[in-house]
View 1 (tube, helix red, strand yellow):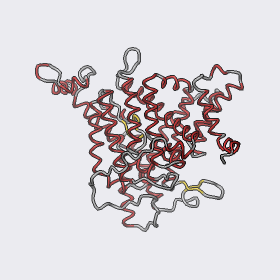
View 2 (cartoon, helix red, strand yellow; view 1 turned 180 degrees about the vertical axis):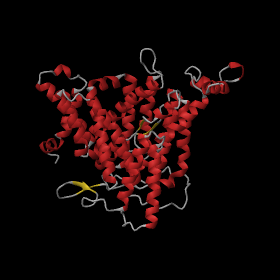
View 3 (cartoon, helix red, strand yellow; view 1 turned 45 degrees about the vertical axis):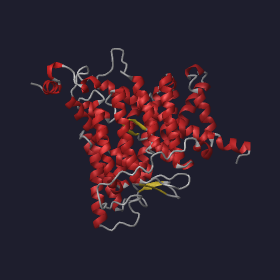
View 4 (cartoon, one colour; view 1 turned 60 degrees about the vertical axis):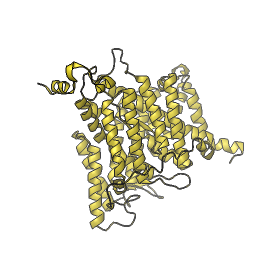
Length: 481
């Protein structure tokens, strides 16, 4: 008897009737079982659990406009709580094996674009507004119209640029790349050399992650972070590492592994204060970047994973798509309320689908495991950037694969795509990269007399970015500066 047959028999209630879980998640209708869903949910958790460690490193390593930083233990608690609630909500409402957590790329916008021009509560207020905007766009159907207004190749280029930016953040935070006031502006390690123990930990951890990932080892990124952290702890205990040589987090073992969750960041939100602090146009552009990153990434991931799970109907449509998109928006807003950055659907959900998950029951298992990690926050204070940052480089490499989907022979799209890709890392700004790509695309079409090839939905966005780029001379002209 096959595994599928055995599991189905074991999961079926006496008399062939449908049990409560079967009725709630339509297990038999989708050809799956309780055992298969739970196995898939556990697999998804281990594939994406690295975000519990990585998100606090990204957010905790940034300072807001006042110089304030967020507590890494509190961020760990909020990241786990936010992922648990969002994932379970998607399972119950959307009935899809789509786990959610703080999105990479989106948290980079919050940390490196929003925080430097406003306070942390104000930045998280923009995240809440982003989620509400996504809900509104989902309910009105505008989401699809805006998405269709941006050329597909440029969407892929934006993903590539964010990947390059994330990789640079990882390399820099780990000290593998350093800045200098003299030429060249960036260099390898310290003075062009890798001469420190932390640099060795980063390099070896990155190589380990790469090997595990290409061999398709489940949880490769998480295993790499754990192994790198263990190595860093041993080195810190037995070698001479200069003070602050590890950066923000020094890998010292805590006195205890378990602790009560610290919910101190929950509800620390200033909804509209960012517009006053950073200026209306600047805050609006950051908000647009958050919305753009949030709903485009989620749309692609949702379509890809549901297709992989065999859930698309005969017309290629996703069951309960309206509910799924609405939950995506609500979850993003909840990420702002918890100060953990916007939640989004994780592509690592595909790992659970590969184990047979087809319903939201898998999410219940994933969410439960995220909830369990609420009591493991002391471990977060052990993980140095050198152990977590390699994940950013690996994720950046994966996002770079989208570059093959750009037609580089068509200059109308190749030049805007190039500008979007290179300006994100070169200016250390996701916003500038996206703006340069969209504005240059519109200008090229205008210069060639092909205005009809630019959607009417795109022109307001282009005007917004033009105002953003010209904000300083505009402020001078108005006498604000």
